[in-house]
Image 1 (tube, rainbow, N blue to C red):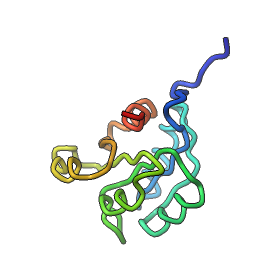
Image 2: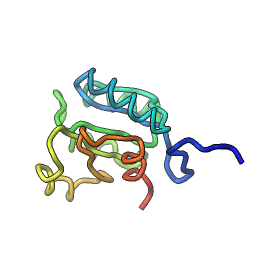
Image 3: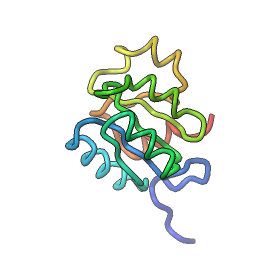
Length: 127
């Protein structure tokens, strides 16, 4: 039997788009997610580039920072929801955004300090 990658699950598309305005975090997130068995297909530094990248790359999962320079992360989440599982992230804890998260179409939230491939795959899995 072939050995499966840590996040190899037919129910979860392992193709990820990372959206964050900080290049250092995008690089760290890429490293963490790829170590967890996910394929990072692209990165975007703001909402406009995220919309274009999502259209072009067709990721299964989009990790979006709440604080983007041109577009609120929650607004971007609503624009991107449907074709991909959207997971929000921030350096702040989930309790900061509890009401907004509940009202959004995001599958969930991961604090940046807690990001792993397994955590993202678990939130992105179909309900």
